[in-house]
Amino acid sequence: KFDITPVLAHFKINALNPAFSTGSVFGGNSNPVTKEIISPVDGQKIASVNMATGADYDAVADKAVEASKKWRTIPAPKRGEIVRQIGAALRENKDQLGKLVSYEMGKSLQEGWGEVQEMIDICDFAVGISRQLYGSTMHSERPDHRMYDQYHPLGVVGIISAFNFPVAVWSWNAMLALVCGNTCIWKPSEKTPLTALACQQIIQKVFADNKIAEGTSCLVIGDRQIGAQMAADTRVALISATGSTRMGKEVAVTVAKRLGKYLLELGGNNAVIISKDANMDIALVGAVFGAVGTAGQRCTTTRRLIIHESIYGAFRQKLINAYGQIRIGNPLDEHNHMGPLIDKDAVNAYLKSIDECKAQGGKFIVDGGILSGDEYASGCYVKPCIAEVENHYPIVQHETFAPILYLIKYETIDQAIELQNAVPQGLSSAIITNNLREAEQFLSYRGSDCGIANVNIGTSGAEIGGAFGGEKETGGGRESGSDAWKAYMRRQTNTINYSAQLPLAQGIKFDL
Ligand code: NAD
Image 1 (tube, helix red, strand yellow):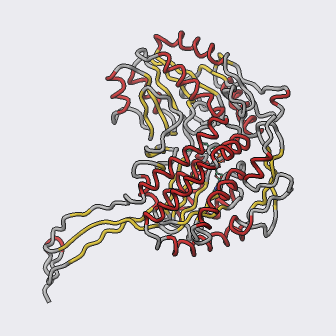
Image 2 (cartoon, helix red, strand yellow):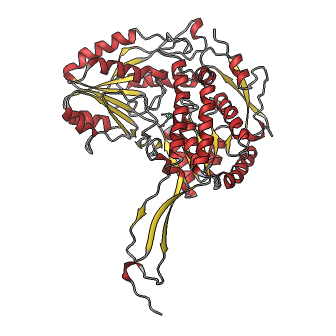
Image 3 (cartoon, rainbow, N blue to C red):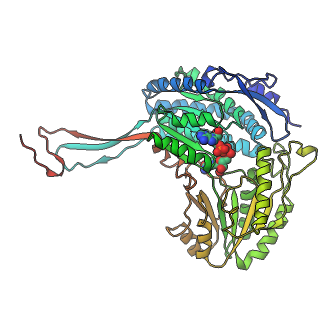
């Protein structure tokens, strides 16, 4: 049995206190509505948190606006130095924070630590970026003129995050937003507020040690109404929202109404094409990890396998054998491959999808179901399952956030790519092949339409160095590496005349 008490004490989260106060910086408790946080690992109550009210949010947003006027005056490399210290503090707290991520969200301990490692990595990356916020210089068509563009901070960045990557996604946004000179307001998922509180404890100390203004990186624990309030708030220049496509469509409309900026990271429906020229070992491990890792609750989880007809039967059998070996149980036990779903609502959505799949013609070759017994007392443990389907079934077109894998057969590579693209979402995609022509076609303009396209790697998991995000209903945003930092700044074009005349552009004459 896992004891979370020392971890809660480490982050000053008092499990015995029925209503953990979030304090003024985090959103206060002017009208303490509390929410119990139950671990999906063992069904135990971890703590209760006070949910912020609209008035609490307003007070925090005022602080963030005020702080942004100070933070932006600190030179970017010096802001990078603060982020470097945040990275160091995360390194020191990696063990404890990883355990809390695992216990609150239900992902494996390895993945909990991995998530904290991603936070450390993005800090390192952001430190480098803080000295590389480059604009371009252009040659002016006018004599003795200079033209260039430069990037300025936006002001306040609002971050809405999902339960499945409760801390990493925040850091992808916050660390870049901070080095770019913005202050941040984070509204984490109401399902995973404790990991957010732990992060806030870690970074508060760094900000305090460096005498940085309160309000530079704020946390508001609240439900979706607080997210909606933030989306409508003209004080927030950019809303970066991660979650379901349903949420993204609502946030996009709200932000667009005020012509604000948004960056959306929404649902995926990711497929792996398994060619007849695939290395079968890579295909099997990639497919199974992609489908059952994090209990199918990654935005990049493999939901569909598009398999060449000539190897379909043999690969299907390998999958059945592999699924028979998956160990499901407490994710803090490193021997287990798969932990629980986040809550009972997620379990019900999983069961409903299985029923719908059957009703639409799907044939299950590995059956699903809820697991019972002492180890599964939280009621959130389910069996990963596999169904043979056709791509056009409504359920296959939809992202179910659970370990349900769909098998689809193909004959030609053109057909496989068409099937891969024939869903509303466009996040991650992969082909397993040793055939150069197929691989290059998959990566070409007539190949995958996703934001992420991999060869001989599954769909799941990404490195922070690349820009992360997807097309179509995945929302079009890019976060993390490459030049994703540009989304957190405003571009300004400057033209300077150092001549004694005023020549006009396009040779226009205007003599007085
Ligand atoms: P969710 O949409 O239910 O909630 C996500 C966040 O949005 C929460 O903080 C929630 O409070 C907030 N929210 C919900 N409705 C809102 C509204 N109308 N206005 C403002 N805020 C609102 O998603 P979830 O169940 O927490 O997460 C799972 C989903 O997230 C999946 O669809 C998954 O694919 C997606 N996801 C995408 C990425 C990505 O990078 N593309 C990463 C992680 C998760």
